[in-house]
Length: 363
Ligand SMILES: Nc1ncnc2c1ncn2[C@@H]1O[C@H](COP(=O)(O)OP(=O)(O)OP(=O)(O)O)[C@@H](O)[C@H]1O
Ligand SMILES: [Mg+2]
Image (tube, rainbow, N blue to C red):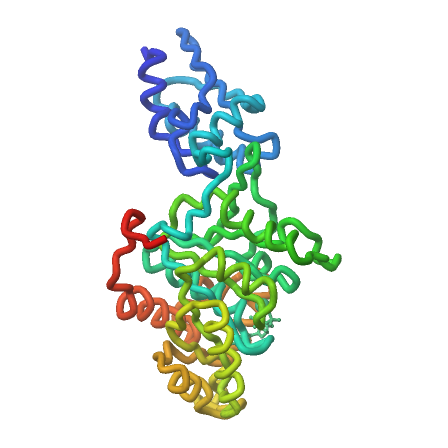
């Protein structure tokens, strides 16, 4: 017959689907009662709006099913318990302030930027993030395009993050955790963020989120050198800029703008991605609708490598519109192969040689 101790031991292996840690370690198991007829377990959810109750319940019952008949009661943690949990997950500094984990952590930060709008920045951020996740990395993404946020839709995330006390637990899809202003605003209502409030909100995107030290943080930057870019550069001083452009040979002006942006915010440019490079017709021919050479020209002007060329593929747009990213839906597609190769170049060929260590930082 099972005992409380053997039940707890079995529960030790059950991970909370939101926090990816053992429910025992998270102190979510409130009580275990064992008698000769059943096992009764009470699990406390870390937030009243907890979205994955059914999954949690399934995991608990799968872990205990072999021991006998199981009854699972779900409760919600008290405010004090939530605060204590958050304190354990993300300890605060002396003044009760959380630290921005991306100034010193080992996370590689890629800021996806462009000299102008509509070149496919958000599509690239989405598919590149997933390609990195598919390569086995832990990946997080920030949709810093606070006015034109589109990443929730592209990734297929339609629910807001869980908030435990003051800690934001980002939702994930296709292996990518995401925070977006889209979670805090309605799509049909313009967001009016200005100056200090915007700066604060962006900082919160980084500090008050349970990121769990991802290997990559990919940021969808808004176009230009506005307040958002400046704030992000300040919060992410180690970010590498990846510039997205289209093949028009008028790249020179865009090059200047992109280089100017990186310089102004004091970040290094890692490479260029050319998007919408060609369209392959039913005849198998590649048609260079938007001209050619823009990506290479920009890369040369910036003195960085052209990381890859992504063709114009209708399924890429359609997939983005309904949250079915092409790298997931059709990995053999020419565009998906391009994203996979760009991800490989970034994590293999262009992996930083330097090791960042907190104690070696010059302040
Ligand atoms: N390679 C591609 N093939 C087909 N459609 C694409 C491709 N890249 C982007 N698109 C489509 O072009 C449109 C603009 O792309 P996206 O939203 O990614 O650009 P953006 O640079 O983020 O734009 P914005 O400046 O408005 O934020 C979208 O409808 C997207 O689905
Ligand atoms: Mg965009």
